Image (tube, rainbow, N blue to C red; front, top):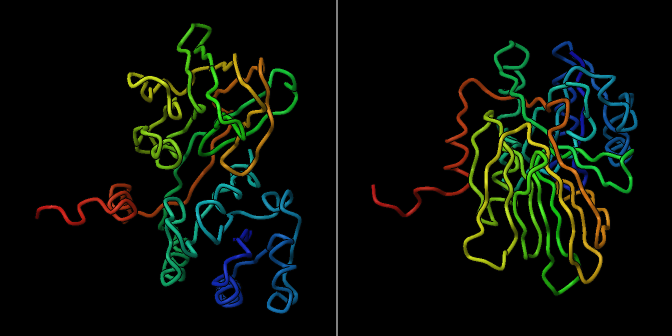
Length: 288
């Protein structure tokens, strides 16, 4: 198998494990290609290792190892795009909902991949387009967020679903999330957790000016149109918290399911509920 390595070079733990990781892979009859940013940051450790620009990685490998945190997996999802190459996340610190493999169990999990003892889980992706630039689309594994940016005033946002009026929000913004993103920004704004691989779209207002406005779960093939009706300044369209585009009053944004899913490596002994309890500290301090 050929592995592509995408990593967060700001994590010092990366440089402690990278050379040993690659040596293990090669000793077990695998080959490796690393993204150029990783190669540039660790040239002394990666002599004679193949590297490539990030947009070429998915065409050169069978599986991507994302070394970092959830942000690294989200970035890897953009790199993989529509290719269908599965992503295995290795957690180098932080919360790690998606990057499930701890540093101390890397080789145990890699051996399971070698033995074919793993699962690949499909995760739906959203696609957003600006009406003013329909030739450009933005893919989100977690969420698409429209927020008021630097303005201190609320905005008015009108939403239609499948051509029918859905709601009008006076709020700081709105989050359109996938089940993967249901444990991210949407959760902190009061949205529900959707257990993957169930599919749905979650519409969650940000600080709405009405106590009755709550997150709503709609079907995964819904086509959503959002109109910025009243904004005092420039707003932001944020894609997975990693890409931001300035938008303005009167702008229309369409959001729908993207054509291709992202494929994440999962483990036969794993449980999403275990992850929730561990990461969210459920039951800590409660009655036994």
